[in-house]
Amino acid sequence: MSFNFRRTCVPFIALFIAQFYSLCGLAADAEKKSAITSQKITDDIYMLSGDGGNIGVLIGDDGTFMIDDKFARLSDDIMSSIKKLGGTEPDYLVNTHFHADHTGGNESFGKAGSTIVAHHSVRARLTTKTEIAAFDMVTPPQPKDALPVITFSKDMRLHINGHTLSITHVPAAHTDGDSIVHFVEANVIHTGDVFFNGLFPFIDVTHRGSLGGMISATDKVLSIANAQTKIIPGHGPLASLSDLQDYRNMLATAEKRLSVLKKRGMKAKDIIAAKPLQDMDAKWGNGMFKSDRWIEIIYDGI
Image (cartoon, rainbow, N blue to C red; front, side, top):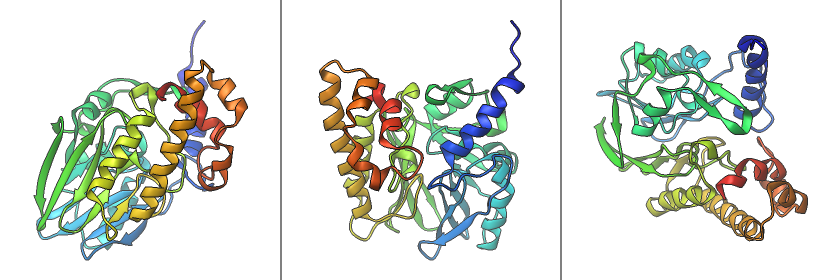
């Protein structure tokens, strides 16, 4: 039997992108460009939001530094927003992980001269075909211009525009290649998808993500944050320390409840039927998932 990728997969992928990456009910047609909104965090650090993951931008005399780049279709909008803020084509671009809502613009920015930096697992994922099993979504290998050219295993530092940028790998969290970026002097942290502010987070267990790893990664962020820290989450609004603490408590409560049931030998469908997280839906289930679907997705990562 022949398989027609375009006819069979493309419609599903378009639907998936609208459901998976558009948050808080703001689903958009995957072929339609969405506006990019900028939010000033400090005199030279900004958050860009819109479809896909949140972007962090640092602008100064040394050039422009950017964290993540959403979808490919938004590259022109992103660049336009940066120029309105007084920036230029990013000199450095950090990918917090490999998912397409955070790396989709890599090729455009790479061709424009951005030096792409990421954990070595991100480059490995981008050079091969990947599948997100929870959504049956397959992504082909990315072209050379989209690949990180500087990779690291544990951590690294960059010194740009008078800032120290500490980039730290947090293992087996959202994926196996997650990094958090700490603007040390500015007291700003970009968490990537380790933190979904106000939402049940997607955990990519196909690529070695886990609920326990998400908790550990959140603890890492908490260890360097304080009451004055501004936190750019992977998804959701700009956050505070208390927002992150609430999120960590939710993850820990979920892990405790779910691990007990799993240790009893209960399969995902049985745990879902028991509705152990239903009381969390009002606060955390207003984005991509209600608790039933979330349990189904993360079961193998518990």
